[in-house]
Image (cartoon, rainbow, N blue to C red):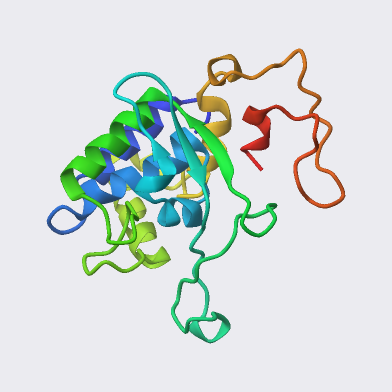
Length: 208
């Protein structure tokens, strides 16, 4: 899918037609985050208004602070299916800056205008304010594929999982548009600590 950005946009549009009431339109903002911003689904679930800089024009910025992975309730500290966790490959309390293109800025601004935010600032939540479950958003994605893809594509691995949107993000926006200092960026991999190596520019560091 990373070679065919229009297909991703068609899927995001198709999401708005699935589910009851406005559920699909609400999920459009959630699914747009992995594709346009490279967020993990759990990071998109934890995204708060206070984490977002969304100007009226141009590129925006997200400062990711938390993720909300889903697991068995007996393994969480709170006894809920989702616990607040730190970011993957980041020290506790360390955030990750994410530059986001104008298209995602516009989608998130529209999302906030239409749906508001939860009392804790979260953009994406269930009808009663809880965290959207994996089952809910995977079911919506499955339905969107039937609207946006041909029968042959539906039985193929194309965009089979919501997480595939994040993989597609790697090829959707040219690095030069993200501000990558290609000539100075030493993509040397990660340091032994698991964090991004110092030689990586901000664009490559936020993918970690």
